[in-house]
Length: 201
Image 1 (tube, one colour):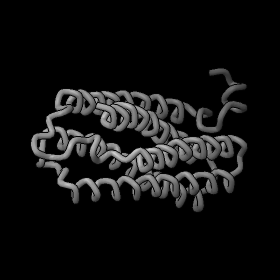
Image 2 (cartoon, one colour; image 1 turned 90 degrees about the vertical axis):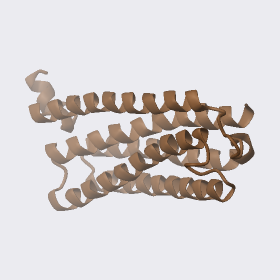
Image 3 (cartoon, one colour; image 1 turned 180 degrees about the vertical axis):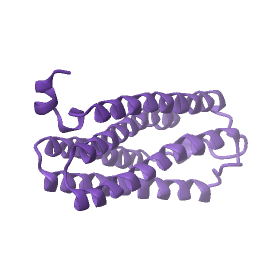
């Protein structure tokens, strides 16, 4: 990277530490891809093995699934606006749009918890069958990641209030945005591979 790019490029890339941290996080996301790929493969192998538990087509509700998808994908859009504001040097805009992102993420988690409780009441639990075990582990792992992302971003907002927008804080916000977008991509696969297929097969 040239000297000019170090002073005029995105704030998070202007230091060697920032560039290396972002590269390291991309490598971490590669490991996350392996984790979710393993969970998806397990789910595919166990698909249909519901034993005496309800079949997914009996429980999956298109309206709830669409609400969850809308909330999470919209949060990806607002997260992108937050990073745009960060690159404009607008700390207030960054905080505002990131808070909106987190509220959408909380809405997603609330809908997912409601969904899980509904399934349990209908007899679909973790030990009820191989299929439901794989479903809860896969969807629950994604939900846990969303929870961690919300907690992580909340701590960064506290740091932003205390330290302002610097090379270090901008790097951290950019990294958490990568993490959030990654979770949205994983959800698209969950939405397609679990919910849509489960409703029709």
